[in-house]
Length: 360
Image (tube, rainbow, N blue to C red; front, side, top):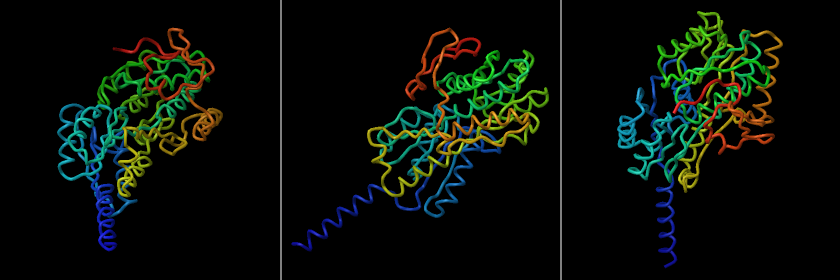
């Protein structure tokens, strides 16, 4: 009887392990908005995928699908990756949120990680980077470098993440230059070199001498270089496209959170961490999820100031949304307080210094 009881315990334990973790190699799928190329958003995700393969070796097997539009086609691609045996699937754009949730319901035994979204479930976690920290630093540099006090910003879509980036940039700008203002052109696209270049030309024609962006190509920087303006790389280092225009780039390091998810999937703890739809990773410069490249094309005193601000953010000693936070209509959102994460995700206003209104 004792022997039978022991055998039964071993069998139950083995069954539990089988359902708690995946057998190696762990098949990992990625859904990309554009081609990986050599710059920008998707390139940063692809660089992270390569780092994962180097770190985990034959413990994982990765695949990706590129140029997947946000919408119904994303649902089809995510479903195909699940049907192909991928046990952990990363969907790497905001517009993949609802398709990820939909497919996850169809495959409760698979794990899904949606990048930049806010919807979660028992088998859907979210991952994001505090991009606004880098944009605050960009704002400081722009405020110190501008001569016209006119800054042009090219935005993608009016979602909280993009709005908080504009506001963080402007908070940084106004911290060093009270006279400078930010004008925003909404491109309504993540990736369109033609639209981004045209928007940059409009900004420059209106007097902007420093440009920023929440779009994905180096077209803005290339236009800035042609016209004698300055700007910042987005997602990855874009210096090679505009060496005289790029002041620095904000670089995304997705491998930090991706490694955590793969380790959890391999050791069987992923489901427990995601239970109740509570697994949300929103990492920062302090966590090494975001960095800025070498500061260039700036005078020594400006470089020193910008570096000092970058150091204070990366050390965790300074929060870029520390009050006062005042809207461009004069409403005080926060006096001396610091906005919390819920406040950030609820942003539906511009701060003082941004011209105009957010489009509906």
